[in-house]
Amino acid sequence: MGTALIFICIVLVASILQSSTGFGFSIMATPFLLMLFQPQEAIQINIILSLVISISLILKIRNDIDFILLKRFILGSIVGVPLGVLIFVSININALKLGVSILLLILTLLLIGNFRVKPTQFRDFIVGGISGVLTTSIGMPGPPLLLYFTGTDTEKGKLRATTLAFYLFIYFISLITQIIFTGTNKVIGESSLYAIPIVFLGLYIGQIIFKRLNQRVFRIFTYILLIFTGIYLLLESLKAL
Image (cartoon, rainbow, N blue to C red):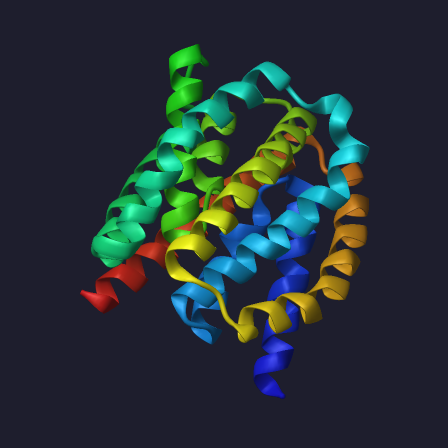
């Protein structure tokens, strides 16, 4: 009963974040789901629920999508996805988490210090590729997108819409790839099914919050999420080494 309550709270909070910011679900849910499930189960549950969220919201926010940027992210991720699967099945995931956490914290501190990035076509492809790698390896495509969008000072509506549209593609491809290479099980299907009503409740609350967030508060909230994710990945990787 306690585990089920924790699971419901994780999904609800993460869904609220996803709906209100466009990137919160995997960042918030994956670390805590890994405490309740095996890595394969946590990653696939995260992917399935993130797909449900993206499908539910995409029609409402389609006018804010930057389709040129979205195309570049997708092309970059096509290269990153198989590399992420290779990492997941053959390379030490904890070493990857350690490297990602250190880089994430350094970049976040630079952003807080007002470091900015000039968007280019090449950087768009690279960010999409890194996101693809992280999706199939640790189930977290959000950090590279979030860092890039924050560094380029992207407006919150465009950030949320383009990120969700990209998730729709990357999570679908990643789920198929995960199932082909690592399989799936009953726990993943049942847990995902039970969580869907909670997801929709979170989406409703998140939509209300999004309308009340100004750009400055949105950016501060972004920094908090990035720092939280970096510290979590750092502690988890150090503990497992």
